[in-house]
Image (cartoon, rainbow, N blue to C red; front, top):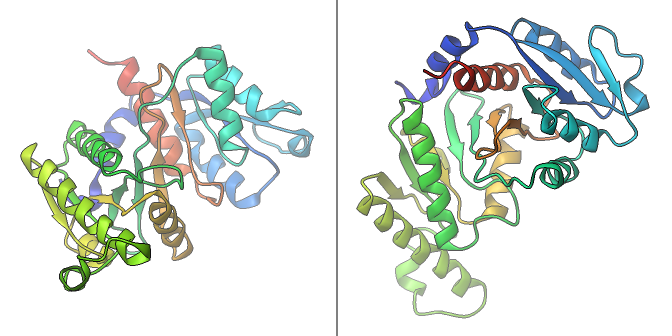
Length: 283
């Protein structure tokens, strides 16, 4: 399966098994978002959950609540819907509410990104607090690699650093300050790549060269740290790319997350439908 078709064939197969019942968090009416959700009705029965600001939205079942994050989490935890998309309401409040209700914690959240050229890849770190230690980044790289394998795709893992290959040998003796930090990112990347290869993965230290890595078909992108991952995530969106999936995996229920800047949720709905039907109709 080609890199730019990471999930396509399997999603279509599971979407044919029937519509599912989901809820979507909507902070306020947004014409672009609502247009994409209307297009998604062939895949799911969608309930919108939000504050009083959405009460005049037409064409959907509405759940109005002054605390929409808690209500969305409650709908999922009480199995009143088969899955949720967090949408434009607060991410931390929604997840914390779900945790309190279920005592469940997700294991990882693979983000499938599509750039403006239609190329798809998984981004391992998309939040400032995550993936600063080399052990964390290795773990997430492996998790994302295994996720791709489960969907029939061979993972090719690109690991990044804070400096170029030709720069590190000249400055590797410096251990303090900013240069010392950059040197450590290079050494971490070398360690991560070596560990990945021991586990049988194709992996490469691409230094700072994100664009050639994606152009060459590397489909798991492991940034130097969570902060850099966050910026990659936002720049891809700014330049016309999109988030296809961002699922909190490891929970007993289907919980799809996203970026609050997104407007097109068709693929999120199709993906959630596929996940739910895959679980529902598992032999």
